[in-house]
Length: 195
Image (cartoon, rainbow, N blue to C red; front, side):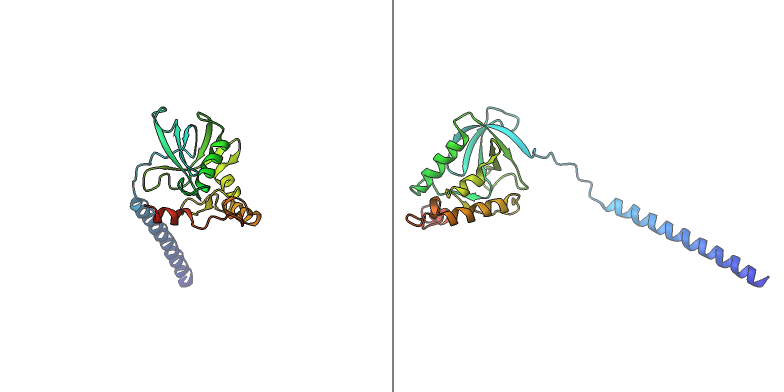
């Protein structure tokens, strides 16, 4: 009888431990849920938007219509992942601007903007990958040797494509990589020297 009573007592102890374990798990989960921040959802910018090009400013900047709530408001867009020569950096700056203009077609042409993690730069321009007829214009400018690949974290969705385009452009001696007439000063350095 003693063994039987001890076995039943042991069974009761196991049941109490199991209930205590469930209770502690429940309390832990309840506390963790209470500790989570109660942030309101941020209104996110759409990943892609169709806009009309008002003007090509440079080889890396556009002015577009159709962003946001005011469709007639002009917004500046900076192409992500590239650094095109400054307009004053002749002949490469003019070449980059003219080629981007040709790739788009003409004013009032539609392009598709694709956004990455950081939507704006420090001066308020929208940052985007620009698509025209399924061609990534950021990549095409680098491939044609009219812009440098310039990775800018956290916007790195197409870094591998842009890097490969630059490798191809260098290998083929395109544009700024032309061995007979290379661009000797990077766009960033040119801007620093000519402020």
